[in-house]
Length: 198
Image 1: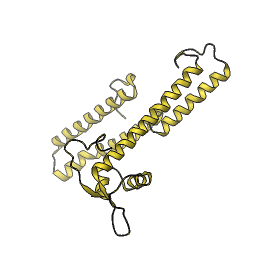
Image 2: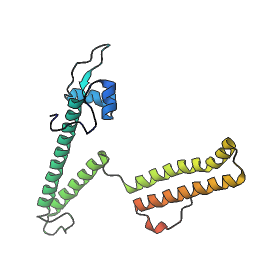
Image 3: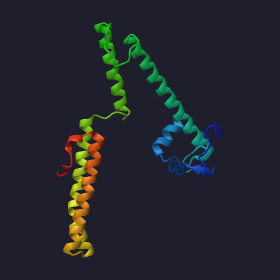
Image 4: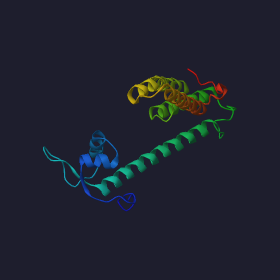
């Protein structure tokens, strides 16, 4: 397993405790505990007053193999769902017309698509555009409020004169304008043009 999933270049192998493994694998104690229940190998079992001990290379390889297996299972599920969709469509793609399909088959296809969409949303691979717009608005409101207060704060804490405060105000405005334009490109709001107030 370690030969198939070796440590990344530059990483050295060592015996580590649970807290060190969390840092090394960039995860949490809860996740490490869940992995232990799934079979994460260890050098010494933890007991009262004594921490688990892990060989870093073995733990890393086990996690990488588990992730690869999960990706393989997900890909197999996606392929099976796509094959079912093709069968329901009579060999056509999802973009094709429903020609020749019975109403029952069309209903099953719609139900399948709804299930796939719900599963993708649960995995946080799919987010409704309206939810993203609301989230961006909330984030920008917080950033805007902080930016609005920043010039006064800098003037007070750094003793800036009125001219320097104007420079800070322009910099804050430019930052917000650039961020809004970037977000509008992401969410496809091309009609908004250069209107960046709000």
